[in-house]
Length: 266
Image 1: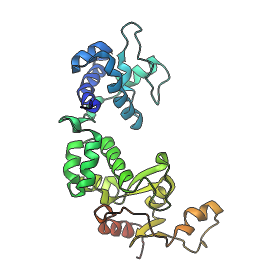
Image 2: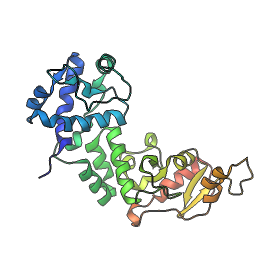
Image 3: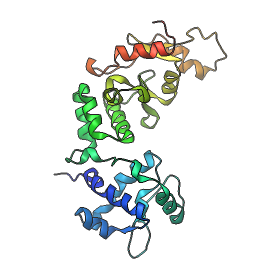
Image 4: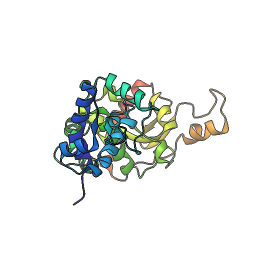
């Protein structure tokens, strides 16, 4: 049976946030005993937590876990906004961790992120129920993106770009305006490269009847470089690269909302 480090991260999260509130550190051994595992395995749990903090640009919570002999974090520790121990600790201690739910709460029953992604792909109509279990925006968005990467075969729906690091999970109805169901529903999403995501969000590009549309199809409303035309004018009227299964394709009603918001007459 595989080891679920996310479930262990779920157990470790409240312990570390408690340490942060009390402005203290904890050793690998102490944390291992608290969650019932050998201290040598703690680094895998911290890896899960560290990745989350990096992704969400949170203070480096895992800096609180130290090697007893060295009095400092292990060699695998990294943070996005702290170059030294003193700065990192200050940021962690100053942050209000009380405002955050446990980002790994979905694993309380032993579920992994892959399990949730599979569930979301298999039953998009259950997205609202899944969101209620996930709770945390950052985690929900990571799972939403993982699902879209799978159902779009890891390619931008507008241009086919397949660099994972340049692909975004775009919401058709924006997160702030979405219901709980829409926030994780693959039908309210399109996998887009970062350029096409931005053009979609500002209304210069959209999707209708499976076709990519650009607001200035003739290219007469401004100066275009060759690269500009390639990502905009040249995409107009092209068939979008959509999921194979109809149940995963963009929702027509959600696209209609996007059209109305940005003045598209389609």
